[in-house]
Structure formats: structure tokens, C-alpha cells
Length: 506
Image 1 (cartoon, helix red, strand yellow):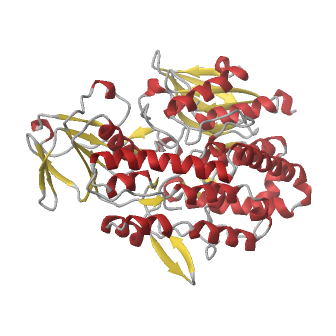
Image 2 (cartoon, rainbow, N blue to C red; image 1 turned 30 degrees about the vertical axis):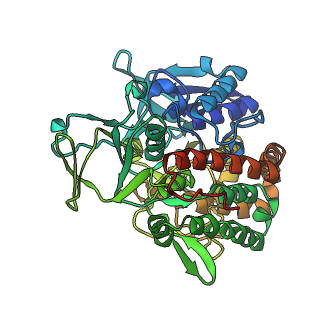
Image 3 (cartoon, one colour; image 1 turned 90 degrees about the vertical axis):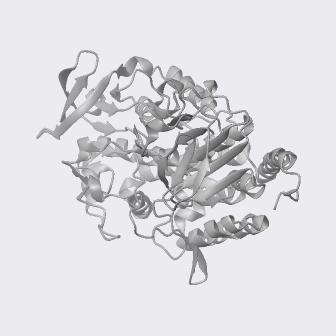
């Protein structure tokens, strides 16, 4: 019986803790194995990955743990988010069920529907074998920093470091020239932090220009996610995308800046009268950084590091400039070596088994265009942030653990072509999650046998909608957004008074 089952979670980051909460709510026994000595994953300050000055780039409702409808600051800071994780760990007494200092090395399915897992105890470097009724791999997206070594790096006499939360309080930015390598969220955080701490000049050196949303557009995306009509009718999904797109041009045109126009033209195209976006291997940011660029406080150079000199950088295109501090913000990699011998059914189910899932996200886009919008079957509306997808996928994983026969029925569902089944880890892309989401929506929307799960998923979406609507109605959001814009614009205008003050565009 299910009450006698005990399952295993690998990883105690936000996705692992989210699943643990759901298991607690379903009275299912579990143990979490965590490689580090702290829970919370990237949000734990002791792990040194996320900066203490970081904040979320989505509104708080879409980054909350299951059933947690307490007040969050919008665009929540890393410190506050870790405090929320801690509060939920204590509420559900999860810490006592975490074994720290364990790394999973391999696993295989047994004939009796159990899983054999080989773990390495990092405290004594010895292997331990466990047998479990379910294996849920929640190792996160940012499990390994991408290492980067520059030519002649050792001759550079200034500070060169990674842009993660390591000894940043000790760095003296006053009157220093700072160069940020990369243009993702960590790069932007470091650039703005340096500027506000007195840097005389901040330069972003990047191979790729990012795709940048504005907050008003993002708010509309969030509002669309919690619109039940989006899940019931395709025409509603298309209509919501038109609303989202309507907020894209307005602030971008407001800047009248050549670089920002390049960003816009590179990642937007018109298909049959609808706006679609190419997100190939490019991070998504919100528009705060564009205000700093407009005022000339942050310069962006579309180039790469060729080599370092004692006091600066020579780019691959031959541009030379001096700098005092270099932060490498080159992103992270998923450590997927333990999954290389396995295949995936419908993306998250490992080896086509009902009680093994991997839910850590795949950020690869390769070189193929990834379009979002009403002309595409794939659609990003339901996945504004990954944690909200956790709630859905984990609910489904627990459902299939309870009712394995229903998993067989789901596997035989062929409304969509089965392009994401029996794939190796190297062949899976982030877009597959969006395929799966809509596959699930269509399946559970129409299958009367699984009405319990359908109603449960509807309840989750409705609860998030109520939280979103109660805590951030549109008039409150616009007030908050304008205050944030004016705060940044005032700071920049004080330092660059020759520029026309940049008013709020909405």
C-alpha cells in the first residue's frame, strides 16, 4: 500500500523542498539526500552562488512554495526568499529528513518497481546503497559554475573573480573601472551593484545580446498564467499573447538608443501578424538595465575577451581598454553525468517509469529557433517561472506514484506527436517542458478518469490566481513599477544630468 512506501529526493534546493512539502501533505515518507551541508540550494548564502544583492525577476506569486501564501516583497530578494524557504522547512519539520553530505553516483530500476541508488558519503568517501520506492531528482539548474580562464589572466594586476557571492563585501568599488563578462542576470546584478557602490565606469563585455522584457509585459504574462480561460481554450491563449505583446514596443521605443534597438530587432520577428521571439541560448532580463544604458552609466561592448594585460583587456576584435576589476559572470552548467545512461519519457519521467522523475529544467536551446506566441503549438505562458511548474509536475508525479495504472494510460495518449519520449539527456531541451505542459493540459482536461488530478491542478492554479490578485492588483503594480522606475532614473540622472530625464513610459 502507498502508506508503506518511502521515497527518495535528491537535492534540497527550492524544487526539492517543494516536493517534500507535497509529500508531507500526502503523508508519504521520504528522505532527502543533499550534497552540500546546507539546504536551500542556490538561495542559501553559505553556498556562495546567488548574490546577496540579487532579486527575483518575476513577481513573487510565481516563486512561492506550495501552499505558502504569506506576504512576499515583489521581485523578492535572495535574503527574503531564503528566509521563506527556512520558514517552510521548519513548518513541515523537513530538516530532520535531510541527510547532508551525500552525492548520488548511479541508480537503476529493479523488477519489483523499486529503485537501487548508489550514494557517496562525502564525510568518509564511502559508498552506501539504498533501495527506494520512488526516486525524484531535484538537483537544480545551477548546480555547477561554468569555469572560464582568460589568456594571460595571471598578469592582470587588478581583481579578477567570478560574479558569485564570494567576498563581494571586501571589494572597494569607489572610483574603480569595473568590467563584467557576460550579460545574464548575474552579470546585470554585479554591474548595478558596482555602480551603486561608487564605480567610476562599468562595462559589460558580451558575446550575445539578451532578450529583455519590461515589467509591465511580465506582469501581463503572470496575469495570463492564472487566467483559467488560457487552459480551457486555445483562442484565449492567443488573445492573452496579443495583450502581452502590446506592452513590448512601448518602453523599448521610449529609449531611442541604437543598442537597445539592436536588442529588439535581434530577438523579435513578425509571423503572420503576430509577434514571436527567438530565445536561442539567450538569457531573459527585465528592463532596469536599459535605464542605466540609456544614461550612459553602463557601456555594453558586443565582443569577447581575447587576452588580459596588466591593467586591462584586449578583445578578440582588437579593442583595448583599461579596467581595475573583472567579474566573470558566464553562467552555470547542469551536472547531468548521472543521467547519461537513461532515457526520458515525456521529458520528466526517467526510463518511462511512473516513480522516477527528473525535474531540474533544461536551459539548452541549441541553435534552433524557439518561438513563443499564438502561431506556435509551444507556448511559454504557463512557465513564467520554473517554481510554478514544480507545483504542477510534482503533483503529477505523486498522482502516478499513487495510481501507477494511470501512468500507463497517460503513456498511450497520442494527441500530440511523441517527440519528447525515449530521448537521452543530451537531446532534451527546455522547450520540451512546454510541450509536456500542454500535453498534460489537454490530457487532464478531457480525461474523466483522472478528474481527481484535474481538479487538484485546477485548485493549485486557482489558489495562485487568488494570491496574485489579492497581493498585486494592477493599480498597485503600476504604482510600484513607476516608483521603481523613478528611483533608478533619478539615481542615473543625478550622475548624467546632460541626458534628458527618462520618464516612466506607461
